[in-house]
Length: 67
Image 1 (cartoon, rainbow, N blue to C red):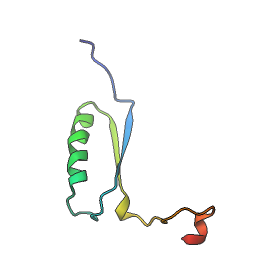
Image 2 (image 1 turned 135 degrees about the horizontal axis):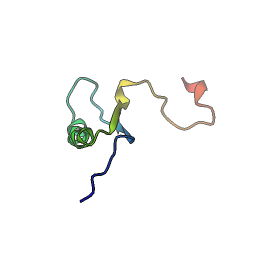
Image 3 (image 1 turned 90 degrees about the vertical axis):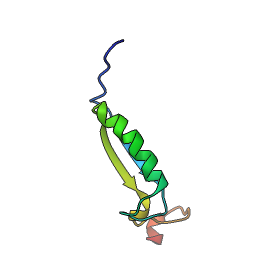
């Protein structure tokens, strides 16, 4: 079996849970399993938990008018 080098890869997990940090979520638990695998392969990891950010909802041509 050939040793593959994944150290140049990076991954971004987008966690769409409805629970704010640092509360545990099922989605976060699943992401953690995958992150452990990626870490062992030296993949760079980033995670965004959407609920922790202010996001405009809906669809408008210019979202800046809706904060």
